[in-house]
Image 1 (cartoon, one colour):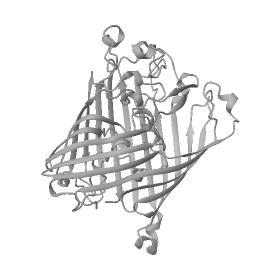
Image 2: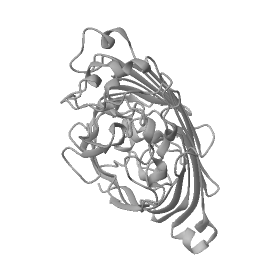
Image 3: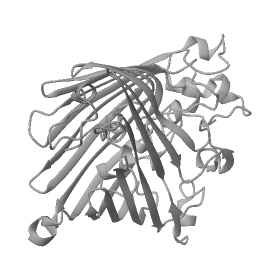
Image 4: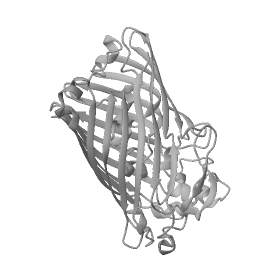
Length: 430
């Protein structure tokens, strides 16, 4: 059971022994008598991909069927938590994230644009404030949080620390169609009443200039500016239930307008005529009991006026720092299920040392381009993926992961097998 950091604030965040804590709460969950907390999490990964990495592997699959494999070492996330309790219900939390071990702008080869080299649109390059907020707690049922916060839509965003999924990298479906980790500036009201935790957020809206055919709304939360444009606003809601011991069931959703939420704001034409409504609904669960961990999620999204995105001012302007792919889907979906069993639970000496070895399997399916826009299809975006592997915990805070995975694509394309190995941790030092 995680320690309470103060009687007033942590009564709002306390969970049952087997419950899963939301990412937005994790920053301050380890404060004891000290007013300051310091912690974090990180991942070190190696992958060997037994398929082509050529930009035309989908447009010309036959030519790349026998291309050589390729490998990579990566530091997907290195995160530092800082939290402070000012007293009288006022607290501060922040989460500083280094993605892929870098800082500054990242160059990437954009498959959506014929392999053109581009600077990735990420505010502050690849060093980001994932959380930065001031919170006032009035009690268990009522808390207000202002600042840069995690948007808890879907399983991956609400529970994205590496000890909350079996695969080496974050679950692929949600990570493809939605921002991950989704974090924006705004205000949040949340609390706990009996077996329910609830949260409502008011945020800057997403920006349709960043939507793409292969990642749907994923890049809509990023801003190349020094601020988040808020011509339009978004609302996120989440409700979790803990009535059954060891089981958490969550419902979450998001709604905003996305066209016109950009700079400069075009006062005429498509940008002013259409709204680009974004609606996302998700259900997810986590079960921990009888030496099993089982997790699952399903997400479905709708984008209004999808056929008009091709004509937006910043997407037509080739000098703008946005994607210029012509078509984005009206719908996207992702669902997945994973289960792991702790085989060390059957060995008394290892059980007493609190060591764990989960043998797991995962299956998921997703498509960021689930409906053809103006009759244009990208059949390679529909993916079925399986993974089998192990998670070894020498300590509760440290996990060593290994897996074999395979993406199954439409029969016209080549399947994509891979071997992934990783070491990750999440812990608090103060």
